[in-house]
Structures are given as structure tokens and as C-alpha cells.
Image 1 (tube, helix red, strand yellow):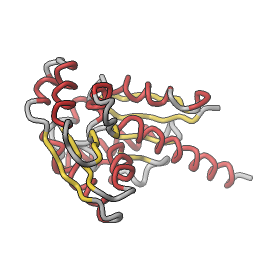
Image 2 (cartoon, rainbow, N blue to C red; image 1 turned 60 degrees about the vertical axis):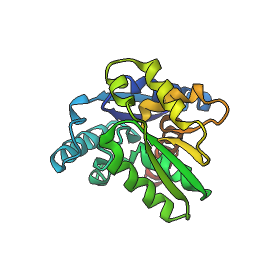
Image 3 (tube, helix red, strand yellow; image 1 turned 180 degrees about the vertical axis):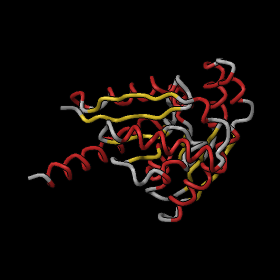
Image 4 (cartoon, rainbow, N blue to C red; image 1 turned 135 degrees about the horizontal axis):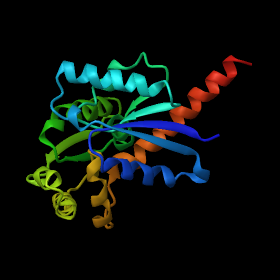
Amino acid sequence: MPLTLACLHTAESNATLFETAAAALPGGALALTHRIRPDLLRDPSPATLDEAAAVLRELARGADAVLLTCSTIGGAASRARDAARPVLRADAALAEAATRRGGLVEVLFAAPTTEGPTRAIFEAAAARTGAIIRLHLVEGAWPLFLAGETAAYHAAIAQAARGLPGRVVLAQASMAGAATLMAEAPPLTVPAISVMAAARAALKARETRQGAVR
């Protein structure tokens, strides 16, 4: 029986990105479901985070693990630690992977509202390894995304990354498509990294439950 992963998105287009990442895992090991809540992308206020945490707890009742894919409301994951199944913050998994080897990490983000949450999660991960974090807002990119101009959005991200000396990280899930334009220096992206982390957490949780009933 495949592991089940429930995803909470604030952008419908992100569901396809995570499905693609899951399909790359061997043997159909992970089955995804998606909850789309664009209304939660209003601000990272305590009320919004509490509302998102309630959704995460609900999703956890029907899956092996839950993945919150929105950086702006990433703080909701810590508010749902009491959920029935593991709840992971997608950009936290990315931050751990990006900083694991130390060195200079160039973190690109497109939505201005994600700057605070992104800085906090990457700096926390970097403090454990000695990595140096530099954040870069891709100027003008987010209005392109909101207007549905996906190709121009990805092109702007790829252009902003060119020439950066450190390890390049695309901090928002919606940015992942720009990786196809960056073959000379492939960046780390949210869907690929976080889906693997969620699969590991789901497997560990299932094994723990099975062990408890033996």
C-alpha cells in the first residue's frame, strides 16, 4: 500500500509540481492528495496561521504525513505539531538540505510576503552548520506570477540567479519551473527536496504505528 501525503497549497498550480516530484520516486511509493486554499495567502498573521494549522490537523487524520507548501504561512506547521500524523513545512526541508554542507547559500524568493518566514527558517538551519545565507528578492517576478505569465516569471528568476557564486536555492514552490532554464547550475527546489523528506517521515510514522500494534 503506497504511503499517502496530503498537501496544503495556496496556489493551485503548485499541485502539479508536487505530483511531478512524487512521480519521480521509485515504484509509485507515494500517493498525494491536495487541498487548495488561496485565501490563506493573505498575510502570516496569528489568525491566519491558526486557521491553516486547523486545516493541517484535519488533513493529518487521513494521510501518513502532511506537507505545507506555502512559505508565507509556513509558521502554521509548528502550530500543528499535535496533529495525528507528521506535519512538514516544505521550505524547512529545503533549508536543511541547502545548508547541510555549509558554505554560501543564495536564497531566491519572489513573493515579498515570504521574506520574513524564509529568512527565519534558513537562518535557523544555517546556524546548525555554519552556512552563510544571502536572500535575494527577484524584483518584479511576483506580479508576473499573479498575472499568469509563467514563462516570464521563470525567466526572471533564472536571470536573477545567473552569476551568483553560492549554492542557489529557489525558496518558493512556484519557482521550481525556473530550474529548467538553469541547467548550467541546477538549483535546489522545494518540490523535489520536500517530497523526499515527507516520504521519509511518512514511512517512519507508519513503521512506528505498525510496531506499536505488534
